[in-house]
Image (cartoon, rainbow, N blue to C red; front, side, top):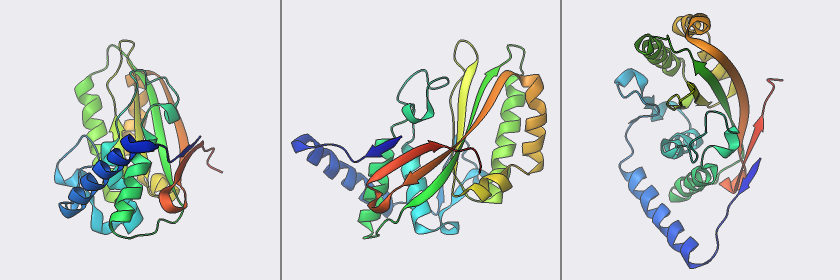
Length: 214
């Protein structure tokens, strides 16, 4: 699904100016370590100096990632978040540093699940937190987001990686393997999806395409 730049008229101009002002403030106070997940201790933060400029822009833009519908656990991934707003933020961040954005592809991994009523949520949370710290240490994880289980226990979690090799390397750690082994006893259903997220030249459009790994 492709998402171009949108918006015309006075309201759009005002919104663009407001976004540009917000981005400028963000860049001036951008920390060396960025919160990129629900976890905020040092081992969970992204060292912005460890990634290239476009990856910094994407990570900063993704801090605003939030669902735009309540049924995100079961709705299409491309329709569940405000990708146009994220694209606009990437473009403004690049413009704020006079950086020309060349086309770049990122990789998203989506985990859809239905948690068992008997699952110990504290155990599930501990596995998740340790797996995330491990993934941050392996490098290349720009965003981790997860929601709350709905009334049926269904939920969605997603990671956005710098590149596919980062995602593969991040899945080989001991805590990640331990969490995967525990899946059978924690969930009644689970499913993985992989998507390519491509921000086109000039950050003027964004494409989301489900990826089979080939």
